[in-house]
Amino acid sequence: MNIQTDDKKIVLGLSGGVDSAVAAYLLKEQGYEVFGVYLKNWTEKDEKGVCPAERDREDAMRVAAKLGIAFKTLDYEKEYRDRVFAPFLKGLGRGINPNPDILCNPLVKFVALSEAAQDIGATKIATGHYARNVNGRLLAGLDKDKDQSYFLSRITREQLCRTLFPVGELTKPQVREIARRIGLPVADKEGTSGICFIGERNFENFMKGRVPAAPGPIIDTAGKTVGEHRGLPFYTVGQRHGFGCPSARLPSASSGLRGTTAGAAGGEPYYVAKKIFETNTLIVAPAYDPALFRNEIEAIDAHWINEEPKFPLICSVRLRYRQNLQSCTVKIQSKTGCLEIAFNEAQKAATPGQYAAFYDSDICLGSAVIV
Image 1 (cartoon, rainbow, N blue to C red):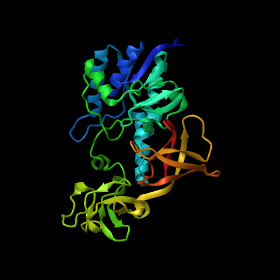
Image 2: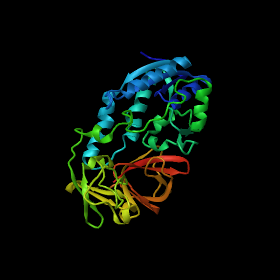
Image 3: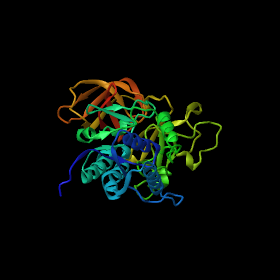
Image 4: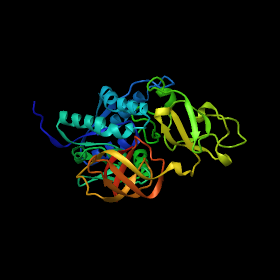
């Protein structure tokens, strides 16, 4: 059946938070017929027996009712588990730290919204991300503290061209003020962190039984054994651990390390410098140890939102969300396609499996996987 398209119809990802709620209001004010879609991607209960997704869905429904817009729940749990969560677990099992928040956008969220739009003849989709779409280019949101372009660095040009980011020109305080002024039920709802769609949980408890993990030695950069870890998948390069004061008792299990000594020289805390998967060894170092810093890194699986740039590329890079942009030069290996990223200043905690997102001023060019 042919469905007539309508430029004033738009499908919005309504998450149950204040950002997408205000996005819905702004779109309606601009004359769009808004169709709110809540994506059900995870239905397992947390440690308290609560399903965060169900609570968010109820909030999304309340927002839709308040604004008088259509609302629908779409079940994409299988797609999320297959396309995002399974590769996430596989990466953890190989000793790297993938980023499901970045993978979810191009592989699940934008796919689901686009399919919903096609079903009703809408030409546009929208989300509550703090980002901007300017002439088919992905730009950082104006609120530098909330800019989410990093998480969108793997979306395709086709996905971007049909997407609006209604709150991208606003700051978070402005968004909350709008929500309070119009009486949205989520005006003061706090944002969430944790794994995309899964929410805030005890990471180690959540991962037990999902990835192979065994205790192993913790060794400092001088080659001295300083403790025992509980399994490499539970640690991230750059992660701080809680023992270091010479006069302190040994750390509790909640600190992340079981130590046999009080800590680094001078009582400094330890940070994860490297995970050696082959020997199940965790390498740790004090805060300013050279082992924590890299002048150059390599990255694979490069994705460019628009055209591939010319190399060498002088640009800025972000190795993790909310990191300040860092100046760098990017070269490409002609035989392998692997990117070589040389920093103007040495960078701390470049984490294998995470993404390096590239920028030309405010324009997000794309990203690649750190190795």
